Image (tube, rainbow, N blue to C red):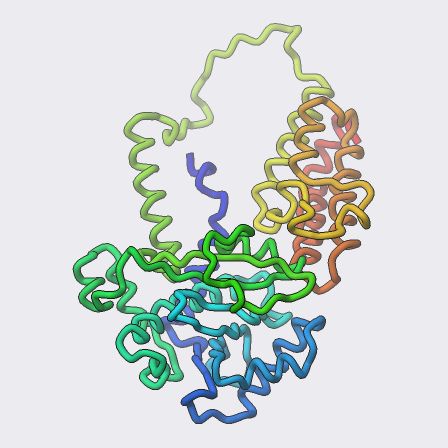
Length: 391
């Protein structure tokens, strides 16, 4: 039964590790704006350099204007000594319209695939909820009453999500379930998958963003509804509580949690004509490989076919598309008569990704992780593969 809950555990572990580092002040979170804060321009220039490096298609002068625009806010994640900016988000609040535009989001190259991207997005979501409550009290001057340094206790208003009366008492009468906040952003092809993982969708349900959000050529408009009754920094805690309830209930209705000793005899009648064949082994082994790849945290871009909506022009460049759902379907139809045929399709999937996406993109890094995962699995079981001669 424990195997059932392993999927996604690494992601939850990363989230909890990030939160613990934040609690223990291993890194700092700063909220900056040129509207009211007296900031050292060098600090904003460092943020500008991060955006410029990680968003090479964006004009340098445009990034500079946005970073120093008093209408914008920047939430940044930096090391304890503040010498290195690990991640940052630049956003424009429009709380009178119940929306926020996420202008830029970037994580340093050294910190990719370590959980910092998800963490900065979760901090950003909690920050705008915190700002919105101040907006309801102070109006457009809400930023004057917010500290540059954000600590965990600054999110205490959101911690009362399980007690509606306390939440409304802290939040003010206007902060009710009838008012929803939305984040809007234009994502390029390499970022669409990441934003989908953070709860963004392709089809905005509201209209308040029209004539307000800047349109970016080649970008995809995405929307994320902010749930006020969810603490985004406590997702791992919430999910673990749900998991514990499910495990407890499963133990009540099933005996799958009982582990039998190796010397217990199980009577399974097996006749001579049911001996395992080479074809049986190959089928089961490929099933195992597909399951292992699907369970890998880096597999999310490859679970389903790429759509034109996600990646315009993809099928003009990629002539032989491949994804794990197609691989699983081919396996179900007994297409893979040798192990090499399966490996070739996985490699094709990886090569397609590397061809369409930039080398430093999150997609490219995920594809290389998948290639390494498959190679490790093949090497791990090399003796068995050799024994059955299925390659």
